Length: 326
Ligand SMILES: [Zn+2]
Image (cartoon, rainbow, N blue to C red; front, side):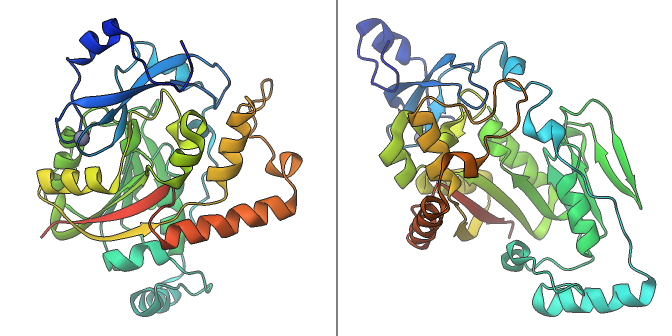
């Protein structure tokens, strides 16, 4: 089997008939083999591209998917900030600053919430949040009504001040409760795309926003193909396109209010590593490859510059979509 090349044998073509796109339900066409490279297992997985929306997706979710989420996987080892609550008066001033400028009393900006017009008293839920690093950061910023949900954590986590991460399915949560939902690099790990977003729709209040951050098929895919770092086989089940995201929103009742491309230098240096057959983590310690050991600062600067250019033309390899429930 040739890595990254099209499968062309008859057997595979026959087998292909049973696969349909997870987003638009049309037939899958071009097919590929991608390898697990974050940890260097190098196991091979069949993927295909949708003939209609061009989303790239895994053909079959492996039975042993747990193998690819070892204890040293990033979301299990993330550092969670300790909650710090401002005294009452300072909190009022902080709230005011957030409302006016999306800036807090420490001068920190929170640009990603601006398009969602999220207020400091908004009820926020981070879905698939791991231990809850993001909600704790949001709390320290000044958003106090935050919680998280993750069905894969070992136990419920209580961070104090009412900030909790629930070990639950979305189906177990109450309807019309939240002003803001966050799916931060989670949707690409989900098999049933439509059900997941429908559940989000159910949980949101009318006028609420769901922020979906995902990898997007763009220039990095065109350049690197099977070595594109965001393929992340077999963990990423679906690599979306602008078209597939539009279909997903339309099928689930949302409208997309805004799309912000936020790709970084990582799309280049990560993919360059894979091209050289180097995993993203070190074999013994499982620490991330230190980018400054593999690339000069000039190279990194060049990658950063290129990422900015791609983002400006909607060709970067990650984006945030603001799904609005009207
Ligand atoms: Zn499709």
